[in-house]
Image (cartoon, rainbow, N blue to C red; front, top):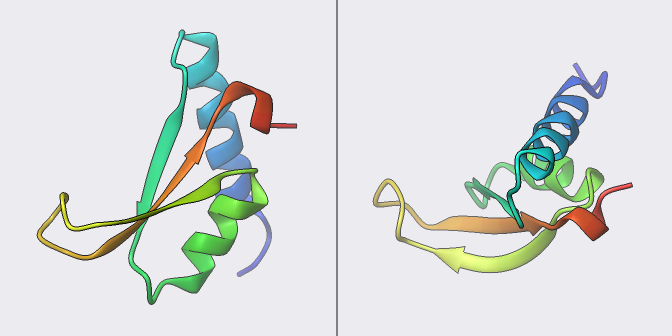
Length: 70
């Protein structure tokens, strides 16, 4: 646990999406899942807000754009 695999996978997925022409990538997490939010922030994602649009749950939304990734 805590070896950075999720952050590396998320970063690579975002890079791939940008190479394919995406302008931004979003992630949604449950508010109680602090590790998921920390992973999103670790790869440079910014907190956008909360939504109930997906899965009939209150979720936190994170976003990253090409200039945000290192």
